[in-house]
Structure formats: C-alpha cells, structure tokens
Length: 343
Image (cartoon, rainbow, N blue to C red):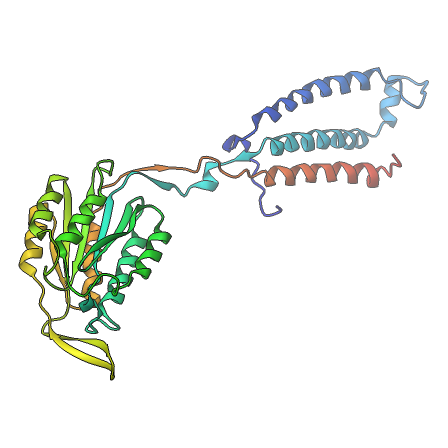
C-alpha cells in the first residue's frame, strides 16, 4: 500500500461513485462546527477588554487547533474516495485483442504405416504431431480440428477453441488403428465434411501425407472439387526425405529395418492445392516442415480484430487510503502529544 501515493483524483474514475455522496456532509459539518465554535462561551471567564484579551492570546494555538480539524476533514475526504473504488486506465494500458471472426481449420494428418519412417527422427509421425501442436499454439481465435486417415479416416477432434483438448488428441493418434495404406481422397473428404455450413466464412484444410493415394473409394481430385464448392482452401504438404527411408518393423525375429523408396504423389497434391486456391509444400526434414507451417500461419491471418480494455479493471484505492491514514495520524499526534490531551 505504501508504495502508491497517487491522489490526483481527477485522473481516476470510480467503480462505486455512490460513496461520493458522503462528501456532501463535509460542508454541512464545517458550517455546524463554526457556528458551534462561535456560540461557545468558553471555559475561562475574562473581564478585561478585547484589546487586552488579544494581547494574551496565543495565535499558534489557534492555528494548531485548526490543523487538527482540517486534518480530520482531509482524512474523511480521502477515505470516502477510497471507498468509491477509484481506478485509472493509465494503470491498465495493456489492451486485449478480441477476435470477432477467426478461421475454421482442419488438420488432415496421414497416419499410415509409412509415417513411422525414421528419416524424420525419431519418425515422421512424431515430428508431424509436434510441429502441428506448435502451429496450434500460435493461433488465436480460430476453431481447429483434427482428421486422421490412412486406409480409412475419422474425426479425432472437431473444430474447437479448446486447444489443450485438441493437442491431447493429436498426441493420441495411433498409426496402427486403420491399416497401412493411404486414402488421401477419403481423408480430404472427411475433413471437408467437418467444415459444416455453420462454419466461419474463412475455411482451411491443411492436408499432410507422405505417399500417394492407394486406397479408399473417393478420388483426391473429387474431394478437392468438393472443397472448392464449399469455399475451402486446401494447403497440401508432402513429408519425406529425398531418396529412400527406413521403417522399423516388428517380426518374429525382432525389429527389422525395412528400406523403401520415398514416393510422394506431388502432382496430385499440387492439383488439390491449385483447385482450392491453396498451395503445395514439400518438407524434407523437420526444419522445413516448421517453416511450412509458419508460412501457412502468416498467410491465414484474415481475422477481424478489435482492441478493447478489460471490462472490470481493478480498483486502486491505496494512495487515498495512505493519505487518509496520514492525516488521521497527524491529527492524533497534534492532539494527544502536543496538547497532551487526555480525551
């Protein structure tokens, strides 16, 4: 409390200004005080003339008594201001950003067997999950969901503002749940279906895969045209190093590393992005994948933002309480110590 001595009350607003009505008692009490003082007969009778009386009068005594009265009035004045809960916007100058309209984003993540390849240490899927969670942490006001796909697809998390729940679902995606092959069309179609008609005006799908469409009943281009019809932009990401990669496989004889050629259907991914007004990216390592997500993050910033201050700022009555106590202490010291009063 003692560190705050700002009592420039004209700089403050009050959360409970009704208490300020108590200040009306100050002039009323002042008038009554002086009328009572003038009508007082005093404690000592003096038979001399007024001129003689003024000669023996101690002027400093009157001033000190007046100091006591004024100190009590000021203590009451600052106490009333403190009770009114003053606050200042100057003490609360950090605005909050309110997102009136964000973006609906669906992360469509390939979880087929090849995502266990170790060219992205420890493997592609682990890296894809971690980078996706970093992307989620950088967003504000967007509803983000997750679709996992391999031979089939399912909605792991609907579009939500609860990013902690979303990140937990990203962690729990299991590559062994839906087979070893890749159905890009089914994954994309499922993601489009999650962006309902009540979605926000700006809708985006980020589709990540490390292979080509070799399963599923929906052709990727058909799914892309469906996305276009719903005004959904699709950013496609091909993940995998150039050349060959290794996948550890469990066998009756233990874990065996199987080497295979990296084959990403970049033409199809480019066509999907082109049809929907998105963009295709190729990630050959973890660093480039992070750069890709950062680029998408920059491109998808079409939010309508407004700046506002907090609705209920905290009251800061400390300065007024400090001065109230100070003047109260001053009147007590003068009355009890200087005049040695026993009252």
